[in-house]
Amino acid sequence: MKGWMGKSKALLLFTMLALFLAGCGKENLTALEPKGYGAEVSMDLIVFPLMIMIGVFIVVMLIYVIALVRFRKKKGQEDFIPKQVEGNHKLETIWTVIPIILVLFIAVPTVFATFDLADDSQASEHINVEVTGNQYWWHFNYAGEEIVTSQDLYIPTGERVYLNMQSSDVIHSFWIPSIAGKMDVNPENVNTMYIEANEEGVYWGKCAELCGPSHSLMDFKVVVVSPEEYDQWVSDMQSVDPESVPEDAVAQEGQELFEANSCVACHAIGSSPAATGPNLTNFGDRSTVAGILEPTKENLVDWIMDPESIKPGNKMTGAYPSISEEEANSIAEYLMQLKPSEITPESAGN
Ligand code: HEC
Ligand SMILES: [Cu+2]
Image 1 (tube, helix red, strand yellow):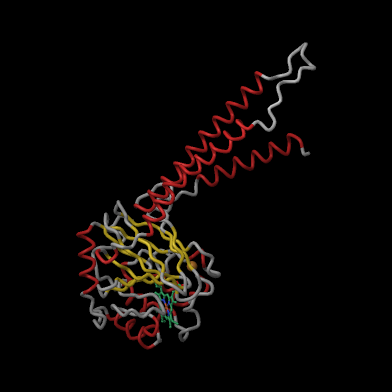
Image 2 (cartoon, rainbow, N blue to C red; image 1 turned 60 degrees about the vertical axis):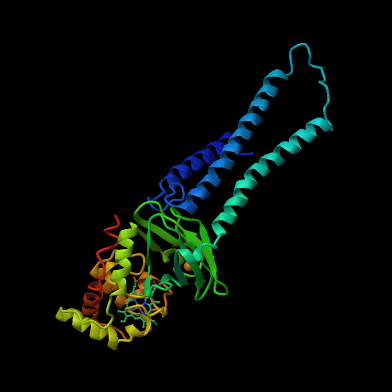
């Protein structure tokens, strides 16, 4: 209808889109560079059917070109009618059976992978973490270890970590593209999955289910460290004394303000499993403030004074008395010095 102009415009748009999307693969945030077991399995399931499809494409194109060239209308034979093959049983059987066989080829590894990744029979022999999805942050409770944290999930390399996941509000979806596939996190039931990372580093996690105005800001990180470092981190976290008073005078004042302004009602320091707000035991070691901002004091002060401007619809806004900048500064001083461990996202190679 539009002729070649329409087509060339479409082609141009398509090329630009392809170039634009090619820039999307952020390191440690792409399923196309797998760094963990689940992501590797998924990648294989992308590559294998793609190979089959490319094979089919090549064969079909070959037949098409041969037919075009060999069976062209020839000079002097304008009235020639070739042999008619409509309703040919042999042909129809062939082109029905071949696709069925190809689909079966694709189905077998897919079904195996599905069962493999859903297998939680070994869970009791490995690390188990209770994951709670909340609008717009993640809570991690290490079952049996008396460790609770939020936003940054620490795991050792080369070991399966079983996640038992539930939501406290709406449906979320837990996704660490470089390490594993997605899993829905529902309010009604516990979904399980396991993750296993091969390489140390800090990997991006995302909520992959539209869950409210700040859904796209519901980021978290997975901090993958060596098994020795992980043990060190566990013992550091277990030896935190939530009552300890900081030495610095400003931080001390911050601690008092933190207690006086109902921050403690929602934010636990120590291993309390309560989860109204993120656990702040190792806040000073975090890779971010509120899952998305650089972990600087200025950002923290901004967050405490006006979280709504940073994450619209979050559950902290309006839940505490208004805070002056000076007070926010002291509280920030207190929270930033909560650094129980040498093992941090930075040391893991952020
Ligand atoms: C009603 C409960 C509630 C109260 C009270 C509350 N917060 Fe929060 N806070 C939250 C929630 C929920 C979040 C997570 C917001 C999000 O990311 O969507 C949060 C996030 C935070 C974060 C970022 C945590 C992280 O892991 O990055 C800090 C820091 C924080 N709050 C400090 C404070 C301070 C300081 C006070 C007191 C002045 C306070 N909060 C009062 C619920 C509360
Ligand atoms: Cu979500």
